Length: 113
Image 1 (tube, helix red, strand yellow):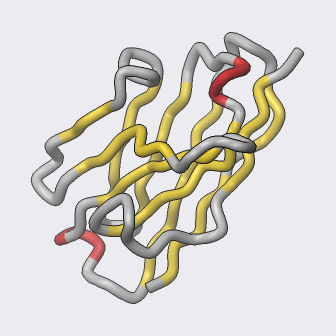
Image 2 (cartoon, rainbow, N blue to C red; image 1 turned 30 degrees about the horizontal axis):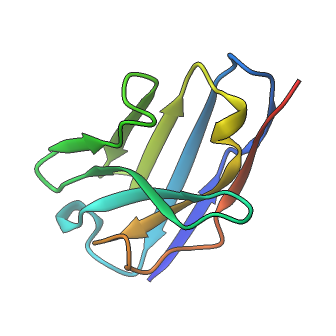
Image 3 (tube, rainbow, N blue to C red; image 1 turned 90 degrees about the vertical axis):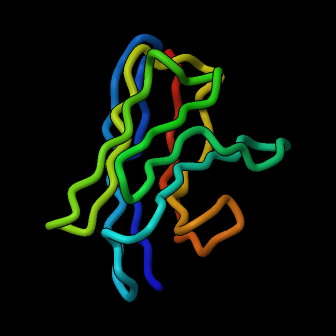
């Protein structure tokens, strides 16, 4: 299993970023895919998932601002992040199957003016 997240960076409050996570080594279209994040000094937080049937869940902390999608033809899951806040600063990871599933190196998102 390999998961490669990208798209992070430095953005001002109120800005947007789109994260991508490209997967390999498993049947992506059959898999639930999660987005997680971990801020410095804080626990890992699950913020969204999308099932193989495209059922979607968001945590209250991101609902209405973030959108998860998947492209099974590209083995990729996306996280569109709008109206970013400083408290969204964290390392973002995608994970396969559950919040405890394999995840890659992640990508850093920093929201600061």
